[in-house]
Amino acid sequence: MRTLLLALLIGLSPGAHSQEPLPAAPASATDDARARWERLSPARQEELRARLRRFQALTPGEQGELRARWERFRSLPDSQRQALRERWRAFRSLSAGERRQILRDFDRLKTMAPERRAEIRTLFRRLLSLPASERARFLDNLRRFRQLTPDRRRDLLQRFGEQFRARRGKP
Image (cartoon, rainbow, N blue to C red; front, side, top):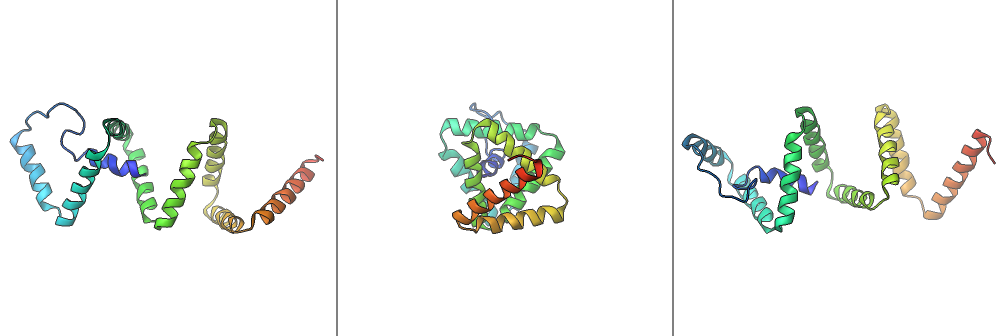
């Protein structure tokens, strides 16, 4: 997610897509860019300067990776780019603690075996396909489950497993 933010910066930074000097832009293009810049609030200008400084502080490899991600994003169909923007806005609207938890979960997902990642993606797709009321109920139950002690969780999982096996007719 943080990289998406930096990827947006790439499109604003001069020379971000090439290590070579940029060719001279037509006067009208530079005038348009200057006019857009001057219409930005001072706070927005400073935010963009800070993003540029963060980008410039990256190693050339990190900058290259970010450029590649930006190009992949730009190559997506408009509908997918819009969906990503909406998810990014939703992520940014979360509390700082919720964002940190999602980033930790994402980091943990990246360390899992490919088979386990595929299994989790399948389960997540199933969750997303549920009607909103069922999805909300599931997430509420999950939140409550996570608040239980490890011993209580283990007991519930064992009991659930026994009930599941009994329904399937297995010992």
